[in-house]
Length: 173
Image 1 (tube, one colour):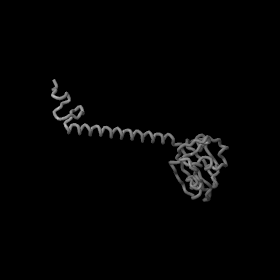
Image 2 (tube, rainbow, N blue to C red):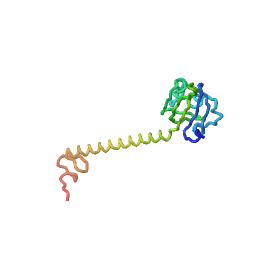
Image 3 (tube, rainbow, N blue to C red):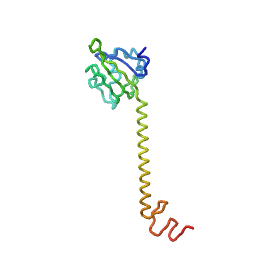
Image 4 (cartoon, rainbow, N blue to C red):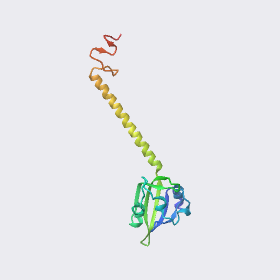
């Protein structure tokens, strides 16, 4: 019941990377049925390819360091792969499972961070747009300052000396 009460995906693997348990949240995010995961190598199933599309060898996988080296790891810039072949950005942590001091495998918790990544992208775009608008306004102010220094009118037009904004020899009424 505890594993099913969280929105994070949770699964466990033995020392060979085979799934020993998986919760409903993990199954929903990954698109698998429980029987499709149990006993299967989870790296081969959901973590086989890097975000750039290149193969991700199990020996280099951070998840597997938890039971290979007996230490916990966390990663934020990874992807997990669904049954349908699509990937999603994920945050995960992998921690060793020990029983009576003997390493048995690892428990992995993960979350789909698609919404967070999209929000970060929107924030970056908004910041860039604000910076561009600020640069444009600064340039506009700089041009007006130069114009005034050179004798231009308040309307921003540069004119030869002695020519007002009303034309040569013209005077306002």
